Image (cartoon, rainbow over all chains, first blue to last red):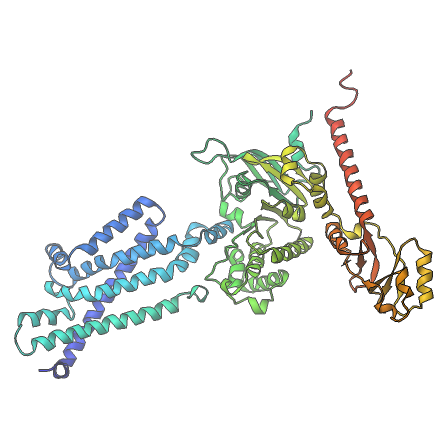
Length: 215
Length: 405
């Protein structure tokens, strides 16, 4: 059976899995963004908290995904919940790191002039610092999204949703005529999701970045 | 001996800003950056804080809007003690311009200028008309620049936008930290002149920090020369600082050529012009000769139909019959207008063969000349002033008779 035949035969089911896969990625990245940007904002200004937050989120990324899923199951059980938690943990490092970097490279003269005009720290953060750091932050979110698309496939070992299911099924039936096209079609879906998400981020970044600081 | 602080405190009207015993000790530093500073800043004046690097001039300025909180002492603004009021509210009453300008790059020029009015809750219509008014005031066409971003502006234009932003809520006081420091010399000169002209209409109280004594002399109504710890070495008008430096530190800081610098404070319009014989370009040779004989000068200035200086003619030039008057002699050079400083006029006359600068009005018509005698007379007058002033100070410090009693 060729890949094309397989796709024609299983198209609807594969489409459903692809949507599922994309959804778990988007939900995880959204949560990573909320948590990661908050951690970045809270820790960027002082050295010790900043180092601690970057070290911890860095360690998350080095835990092999199989192991992390395995660790989460006893706590959260099998299924989507454990998968999302693991994916959120993997997405944190690029977001925290880019939030910290983006906020730290804002020109001090801009901050001084804002303070000098009587902007309080809240206003400075939301009106000046975050908008100026945004292009760097959204790049971090984009990296997190792309990493997550790949790792989400492994989430199938703990009964997570998405295209990973097909990869593990094919692996279990290794040697049967459909196992190779099944794996290839899942990989193809993952690649398509990754490319589409990447493109979407380029577009969103352009749309949400002020014309005054666009490259 | 009188209390020396009185020399730092203006008499009469209540000062716009009064600093009392203002002190700042940075953590981990043994010596205060600003050490018990007393200073009055009169309303409507440009006061320059100038001194060598590390003297505490920028720290002093930032203490006024409390970007740096004082360790002790008081800041009084318009008679109100603002040492412990809400700093953000205080800063909205004080314009702030820094060398790097610090425009918000993600906001349009109009949004940048509207920063403080928005925080003060002005309505949109009022903000819009104020922004346009300010842009026009600083010489940026509102319809062109309103919606541009800072990256689209040149350095000079950004600095103007920065000044407009500082003036947005019409604060009585402006703090300017080396505002023209990062701009090329030609643009800087133009911006300085524009700013002085603007100040003639807005009459703000301005505290201006610079390390450049020439800029201080040019921009200041009053200059405070600071030494380490923001100690006032002399607080006086530029003219007095140049002609009567309080001590060696001030004299050193002002540097050599104080007389030349002093000349930059006098304008051509302030001195009596020297008249040379003149003749119209269509005059006859005998008329020109008569004009030359009637004066003690060695040359006649030929003016064109609009009375603009055209040529210098000496007696021997008239002997040449083959050329019309307009082509005899040599061209009239070194032409200046009355608002030019005597220093610049002196520079021009050094280029002139006749040894004087020709003064013309706006239309270019001849008014008179300035020569070396005028300039040296002015220098002597300045020296006499300085001598009398220091003698008068001596009288105050050691009044005659008291010591003998």
